[in-house]
Image (cartoon, rainbow, N blue to C red; front, side, top):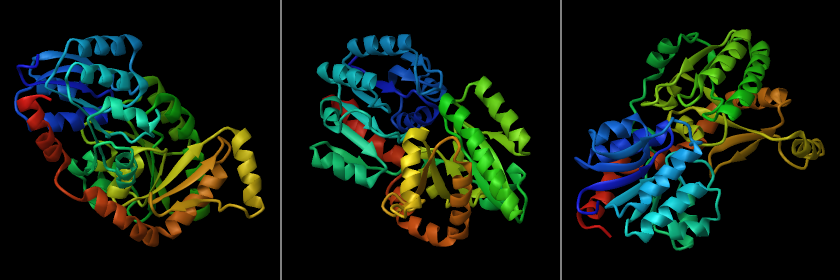
Amino acid sequence: MKSDRSVFVIAPDAASDHAIARVLDRLGPVVLAGVGGPALASVTRGLGSLELASGRRSLPLKTKHRCARAAERGPYRAAVLASCEEWGLETARVLRSRGTPVLLYRVTLAPIAPPIERLRDAFDRILTPLPGEVTTLRALGLDAHAVAHPSTEVTRLDRKTARLSLGLTPLAETVALLPGSRAEQAQSLAPLLLDAYERLRQDRGALDARVLLAPTLPARVVRRIELAAAKYGVQTFQVDPALGAISLLSAFDAALVPPGTVSLEAVLAGVAPLVVNVEPLTKVIPDAVARLRGLVPPVKRDALDARASITVSRLGAPRIADALGALLDEREDYLAQLQPLRDRLLDGARPADRIASMLEPWLACGR
């Protein structure tokens, strides 16, 4: 396939599917292989052998095997991967061994699970919106570059329009509840976030919320979250996979989010995120004892990451409510602290344009 403009892709979720599709759309006709969603399928115009993903980050084993076999049929002119899970690393190594240069595009910012040193054998170049990650990767000899997050390319509604579209109370403080894009995570986190919101609403009065549901969630999980939200009188809203949550986040003053990409999307939208980490009681209880003794602060404020975060068990709704109330009270000062990060995330050319310019020499000449 190396004689044509062939590109191997791994885009297992909706966010990376749309982000990589925007990149390839700027390159003209390409032939795709690998795994992607409907956005990438539309780019192929019927060419290539793209395997359609379910939209969930956890792909079926048979899909991973077919993807690996497709990698072995290379070489391809270039490869763009949004996954650095173990199977993605192995696929990347196969591609490189067959003469294909491989780019890792960090779209969904889950922590890098494998030892970072292993990325050196898998990827020719790594692109990430996290400046600190770039510094760490370069120190290990990897060709890493900072790019604006793909959410910067999404049209965001202004605050008034977003609030109207979500039916939010005009004068109330507003909170976005985002339980996450993984089924088990969302199913367990949503009731906790709803409970925390209700506790704070009873205390403050003029407080409104919406649950924003990721497009990757299966229907059974969506239904359970909808039922849980209805008990608290909170409406749910299905996020458009082409736009993501960021298109609506300007409607809110604060957001309760799991660790990951959505906290950065909140920063980009000018919303104060409270990152909720849920851990077993066996780990949370010693931390709580330390807090009672005054050894650690109840809410971690990290100016470098520009996030507020809290670690609780599934019984931790009261602590989340307290932390969210404090965050709302300090919102303006906190958003001012976030501004340097927001500026860095927005800095530079549109990411799709920049990444396309990096891929074009590979497509023209190969390795």
